Length: 626
Ligand code: ADP
Image: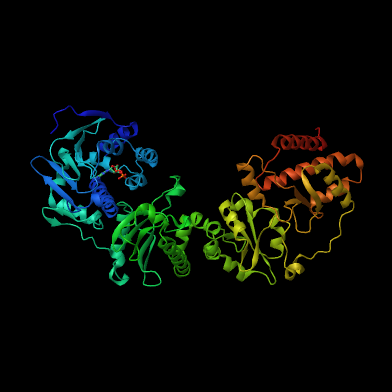
């Protein structure tokens, strides 16, 4: 042991907070601490193996293994690995600060004692500190493969830790010595340790030894034929990949191929999309193996971004073992694997949708928002992804029903060249939009989009099965001739209608591109239409919010000569004294039409106008004196 006094350090504030929670937590499932430490040991061994592949100097030395050493007398459990080890500075950096940004969010969640947060304990990189759930003192004796000096780190989990040099020889790797709390001595029992390893660490790719016995099978189920893998094994493997999660995957896809690429893979879809819960992006990548040996545990180049939520392993015999992380990125096999994995996953989803529609719906409600960004990201697969999209629509009475683009086309009218959609903030406001009137009359279906991502996706897709995708607030809308009969009406225009149109034009000159007669509306007095080729109102709204200098195109106000209000304005326009009132009404109707799209461009003016119109209305009421 050292003759000098150990150096004293204080933990970063977040760690203190974390330690406080962990050491006082009543969390029952304390065995996860062991799982975390075994996983760290395994990572350290993976890192060493990787270094050894590319750096000759680092080769040789002790075999790669993990050993559990319970010492009943001293009440100490040691987890020893022959991995990469840590230098003095590594110790300060790795066991004194929380590097990952997610840790703060994790802390907030943990304080709320949310079940989900405990799920995330491993993913947020707080693993090592869970040792303090079991121990009131933790020692780490370690030597990095890069140097000869060994170091001892020690802490009782309150505010400080110490580091000192160790005299004499220290084996390469790390020994985590847990001085167990009085009520945690069960962790010295071999049968208990065995059951924990079996539960959480079966798939650790290095032998775990206890009293000379190897505890884990290290069975790479992904290279076995599907028929030989049980459902339970699939679930266990997923839980291991997800750092000891207790969740069950929504589905898994087991792939094996001999040509043109030789590979085995299992991909899993987790049951929940934590990104929807506001956890931010969960980045994790896939495990990449070469002939069953792990080369990289977080490869993010094997799947496109829109499938980044999948977990899994990919093993290819075509991959050389000694590739470094850096050259791996440029390795020509990766894009090829990515292409195949993507196609297989999309095909699998299409099958799932037909064979198990309820499962697919659950999947889509969790991961649909990520999946559909693929239409913009992956040009080659955009039709495939579009097929997987689901929409609410004006078809049928069931508000919750969803449809596919293919089903929509099945129901399309004869000669219908376009697929119609309307987006808005929510289903209720979309369904009440005046723009739907002509579609109802002609019995044409309109897709309802409540998420701007959907509309971006459809805009990028542009066409599906040769039909144009058109927002119904656009001048590009064309109605199929086969539906004209239903819309046919030979009502006469009210007298003075042209004069009303002129008054509206004069009043709204700066705001709209034009005012014209509407032949699409049935009941509502007016609606706003976008000029041909421009973005839909909802996309304009998104752009307005995000880009200060965005200039929305001037829209066209269509007025319905057969609406009661417009008819009355036509009557009033016979007397020029009413011109001002008609102009005012024009501005108010314009503001109302904007409101229906969720926009208010001049709230103060609209409010004032509304008040003065109400005032006029109030004045026109006769008061009855009794
Ligand atoms: P995570 O493993 O999620 O990064 P931890 O808190 O468990 O977070 O560990 C922090 C860091 O400490 C690890 O990233 C690693 O660099 C280092 N570390 C932990 N255990 C070992 C070990 N047995 N050998 C070498 N380094 C280790």
